[in-house]
Length: 437
Image (cartoon, rainbow, N blue to C red; front, side, top):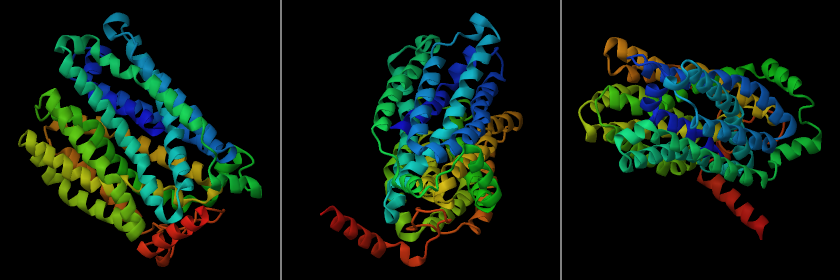
């Protein structure tokens, strides 16, 4: 629920991008580019959020940080809905929008790493992939909810009403969502892994010391994770953030057709997330990532070509790309937190993920928009996804398999083949049942 609230904003912003372009920037062809550039602004703040929230999460606990980040995000998102337009206050309008996007980025810098760490440390070792995939269910749920809300408004409001004031309404939904998420998080216990760290006196004594220890002792998993974050985020923000505007302005779909294409793809992806997460518990994380990297590299270009052939073909092409992306998305919470030991896990995830997401994820939409607009090469987003996959393929050679490994303690987790698979899952399930009885 909390993650859905965080990513609801990104979904809403993406699908109302054309309205934002007309209200917050001077008229002209560059307005759409600046709208996507302001999406990237929030990513500038994400590394700073990671630097602050990550070490704090290893010092104070996962729960407290997550409670703060969700309320900050929901308030900032709601305020976007009441901002004055460029016509009303001139240059102050995009400045205020930029400030709120920066606040949102700072919040997200702690949210995602904290939520992934929280879920990974709570899940049973042999089923971490299945349970961790529900974090991404929340991510896609936030994107999909934003799409649904805007699509409903476009169907029930006139075009003039939607362009005038209707685009503001989806942002107001963030506040009640944030309050519900805050209530749920306030009733959670701290993760068992962090409680063990505190009991053994191994929790970080200061946030600064934790950050220094991370950079000094764990630079290898940082670089490996960076290589995986690059293709993950190029694919994510090309497919889920840039795509609505791309289909509408470059492929000449109607606004409703564009949103319907994205929504159908997102719902299919959500349905398959737990299955793919559970499959990673059986065959391991690395095989899932290999399948996704090679699949996207081979299929991205033909699928983007297919999108230009019509509405039905666009749905099929987007669904295929989404299915190939799911093996990455469904295993983030199981793969990335397990690359670091418990005492630097939150910081390791938050810092690495947010720095490279800022550089490659936040810039995906404006880079795609700039190149496609300047060259007319409609398949460039596919080439950009392929470019990202090259980084991931190299990083996979250095990734340790952690399926089924314990996340307790201050050693870097690594699993053996007998730690995962159907027999390991069955044995753990039986042990948990016996414990329950």
